[in-house]
Image (cartoon, rainbow, N blue to C red; front, side, top):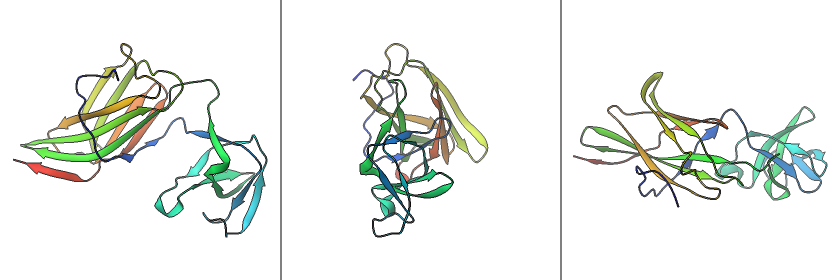
Length: 189
């Protein structure tokens, strides 16, 4: 794996969200839309095969295997097994995650990972920002033109700040990703 020098091991990740260009899916067959995220719920609609969808809600432990969609002005839950990722041209598909932070001396070290789940390498700048409320604590831009983040690759990294951050934002050619800083992992005097 080719990556920049500030990488280090990462153990636990929590996903962030992409805000500008949402992931899209295509139905692989005719699917039912449920009123709740389980197969015993009322069927409120049916979606034909080869229909492109954008999730309007996230899944989580309570909704394992489902995501919320809007189809013909109705919102409901679709079982993920009947859809696959839809990408118009083959492209990079970055996913950023945050594992929390450590306090090392007086430095707040936030741990992250980036993964390229797409079909093409990501080449270009990524601007990384840490915030405490509306106050920007850190901004750093790294150019991934040479080497790029290869398709199917990625890795961990960290960002240091002098104050504790509560949220993060990464801006790429594909859009903006944002999320909350995870939990305190440990304090090292």
